[in-house]
Image 1 (cartoon, helix red, strand yellow):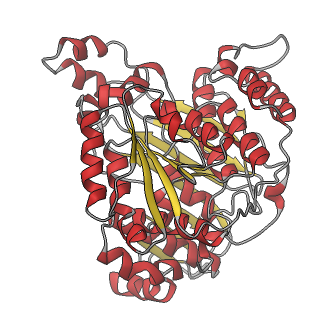
Image 2 (image 1 turned 60 degrees about the horizontal axis):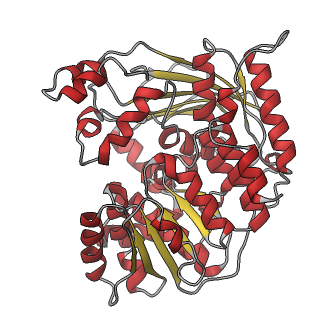
Length: 469
């Protein structure tokens, strides 16, 4: 399918602009019909599901976006560059101060400076060349993620994007179609899939400790009010502006990504439908109104996103997922990380494990710390065991999971292996966010989650994160 024709057909936001109820149909049915038609026209076949590309002995990286996340990932690449697995050949940001700071960071471990692309908002496009890079590492504001990933793949590069990689149904479809057409990798960098606790739970599930899985609860609960108000942390307050325009789960993947690993989503099961509800809004607008900044005070009346969004998701195998989003309310950080099986249950934050002893009542107590430690030692995920020392000895990022994530990405590209997460994973997890907004708009109406794999999800397999690389 011609890229330009696809871009015109699936323009960002176009589907939601036409989200109106047709006579005799619910709005959910109308939206599903439109999405299914776009999937059909895109010609999705699932041919990138186990995609392998030619090995790249030293991955040349073009890093797009040098804000907080871009700076953090530079640190994560330190060891990989020094070991000869990767090199940072290009950097791009519109802010010259961030460019200079990134150059100084890179100079600490790389003997030569990357080519710099700056000066205007489209300068990054010049870095999307196979003469310069093999991989586009995208750390920009959300609205650039899909555009940059598409451009990278179209120009022959692999794409790795921070979350979310898309936030409309059209964008998810475009990404899948482009990956299939170009046979380039496109991964959404969900670091929580590499966290020690989540990997430990995954290993226990795969080893049968939890029995039959039935339910999970996950979330992104993180008070970001001060950071969203700060004009320097999210430059030009780009993240705050999303909350003035959108209402739903704007950041699904930190909680949902690991649960999809637990439930073998796209590897024997899939997400089939959801319904979403947002609470009223108070915390963010009150924080804006309490400032001394007239511009922020004016924004207080414009906040659209509710304080708490709750989305309920069903799967093809009859499992249920509760997914929450709240970056407005004052509370400790939490991803919930609850998973329920017929033989065990885990609750996160703090981590608690319960092992079921059948119908006989045993006091319904969590395991003691000592007993839980035995399960931790016995079922520590082999990936974490292999990389723990490296993760501890080098800049870790979020307790080590950022390093493990970047290690896996670069080493898979070095060896020509398929990636731990593919374009279909990122597209699906992002699609949940888009459909949560549609459901909220339609009064919490049930939304069908379409299949973007052409049926490949029915093929059962263990999650590839367990492979030894």
